[in-house]
Image 1 (tube, one colour):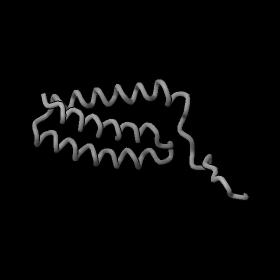
Image 2 (cartoon, helix red, strand yellow):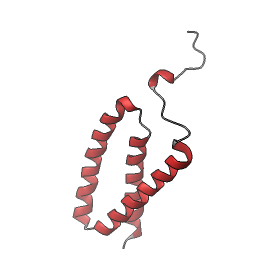
Image 3 (cartoon, helix red, strand yellow):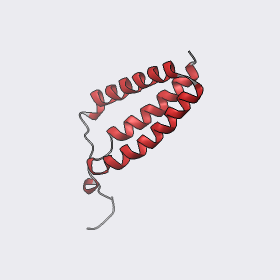
Image 4 (cartoon, helix red, strand yellow):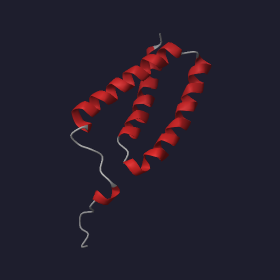
Length: 92
């Protein structure tokens, strides 16, 4: 097992899952479609390099990391909406 591929794939999957998790509800479909394109490119890389075991381990670690983030931070700080953003210094 090549740990460099595990680390690379773990980082890629973690970022994709994190972006889906922390996107506001109205924009989530767009982010999922972009993530599906990125996932297809990663899947082709996995098949080309024949690193299926490393990919399975990377997905498991990425899901575990995202679950831990959600458990300790995401539950208590839900994703806001674009309407909640306030710019400091604006006199509205």
